Length: 119
Image (tube, rainbow, N blue to C red; front, top):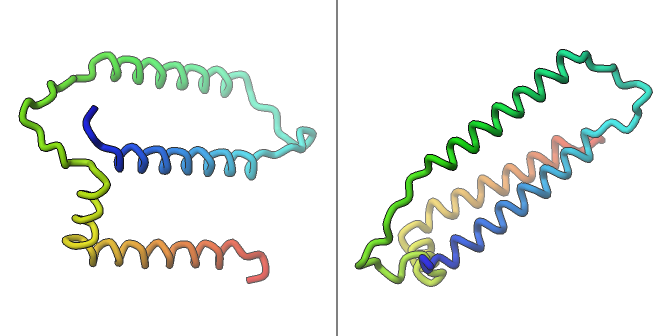
């Protein structure tokens, strides 16, 4: 409805990647040796359930009190289109875009280097 195809695709890609990383860390950190696990006290279990319930209540209260804004009558229809975002990204913001890509590349190379078992 807001003509934001690019934003929709970016959100889908980012959240799918975040969920995949979350699953990866859960599988990596999951200890399947249940014999070696220390048994948690009942107080720890109860406090975790209470904390989770309070977080759930806060999230429900935050979504109920969310403010909705009316749609403007004279909105620019080119905002959010892939063509408009690409034109701005590769003309006006070319240098910050390239700097961010080099930083991401350096972070990937660094994480592979530090994650290597031999080094």
